[in-house]
Amino acid sequence: MNIPFNKPHLTGNEVEYIVQAHTNAHLAGDGPFTKNCHDWLEGSVNSARALLTHSCTAALEMSAMLLELKEGDEVIMPSYTFVSTANAFALRGAKPVFVDIREDTLNIDERLLEAAITKNTKAIVPVHYAGVACEMDSICDLANSYNLTVIEDAAQGVMSSYKGRALGSIGGMGTYSFHETKNVISGEGGALLVNDQKYVERAEIIREKGTNRSQFFRGQVDKYTWQDLGSSFLPGEIIAAFLWAQLEHAREITDSRIGIWNNYHSLFEPYELQGLVRRPVIPEDCVHNGHMYYLILPDSVSREQVLSDLSNDGINAVFHYVPLHDAPAGKKFGTTSGTLEVTENLSARLIRLPFWIGLSGEQQEKICSSVIAAVKKQVAK
Ligand SMILES: *Cc1c(COP(=O)(O)O)cnc(C)c1O
Image 1 (tube, rainbow, N blue to C red):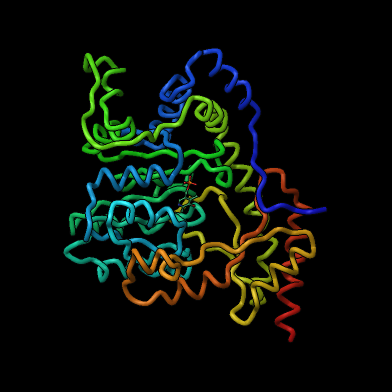
Image 2 (image 1 turned 45 degrees about the vertical axis):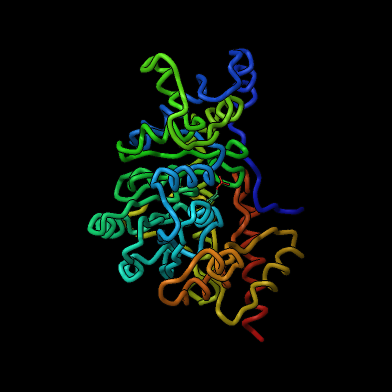
C-alpha cells in the first residue's frame, strides 16, 4: 500500500457548479461564480478588494506591476521560498534581496530586515511558511517607518491568522494560491488581495488587459478603453465554479487538516523529546491552517537516506525549497543581505510528510514509525 504525498480533495459540488457555469452561458471571467468567490474572500478576509487570478504567481506579478517597480529597485524576501516570490519582482527588473529565516518558524527573520534596507528598497515580501504567520507587527512597523510596501506571499496561508487578522489581509497587498497542492484548490488558481484602497482601481485595470472594463461592467463608465499597462490575469468561470465549491467548505477543509496535523504532532512528540526529530513551532499569536507537516532531521542524519528508506516503505515524503540565493537565477537576478546560515542549514534537513484529507490515523502511525526507524538507524551508527 503506497501512501502518496498529496491527493486533491473534492468537497462534492465542483462538477455541479461547472455544469451550472456552462448553463449560465458565461464561461469567460468575472461571471457569477467569480463574484461569489470575490465576495467570500472580501468578507472572510476583510480586504478592500479580492481579485481571482490564474495563480498566486500571477497575483505576485500584478503586485509588482502595481508597485511600478523598475530596474535598480530592491525587494526584500526570504531565500527559503518558492521561485515565484522572487521571479515576479525580477520580471519587472527589480532585485530580490534575500534575508535569512528564523530557526523556529522558518519565516523571514524580522530582526534582519532593517540591515537589508537601502535607498533602493521598495517592498518587503514576507512568506507565511506552512501557513504560519511571520512577525507581521514588526515587519509592518519597519515598513511604515521606511515608507515601504508589504506584500504578503500568503500562498499557503488561506484560513490562517495573525493576532486575529487573516493572512494576506495585513500588508498593502496579499496573495493566495489555489494550486492543487494547497488547502483550498482549483487546480491552478490564485487571488490578489488588495488591502490598501489606493491600489484597487489600477489592480482592476492591470487584470483586465490594461482596460477599465471592470468599471464598464459596473456601469461606472459608458465605454471601456486602454488605460494602462496590463495583461489577462483573470481565470474563466469554470475555474471559479470549482473554487466556489471549495470555498464554501473552507472551514471544514481546514478543520480536517488541523486534525491530521495535530495527530502527527502528538505522534512525534516523544521522539522530539529524544532528540530524533524537531517538530514545527506555532507561535502564540498565530492560528495556522494545517497546510503541511514537516520535520527537521538531526544534523548528522542523511535526509536523502531517510527519504529513500521511506520510499522503500511505500511512503512518499519529500524535501522542500532549494534556497533561491543558491539557485542559478537567484545568483543572476538577486543578492543576499547577511549570511543565510539558518536557511542553508534547515532547508537541507527538512522533510515534508504525506498530507491530504482522508489520510488515516493508521497511515500516520505507519509514517511515524518509518520515519523514526530511518532516523534511528543512522543515529545508532
Ligand atoms: C504555491 C506557492 C506559490 C505559487 O503558487 P501558484 O498558485 O502555483 O502560482 C508562491 N509562493 C509560495 C510560498 C507558494 O507556496
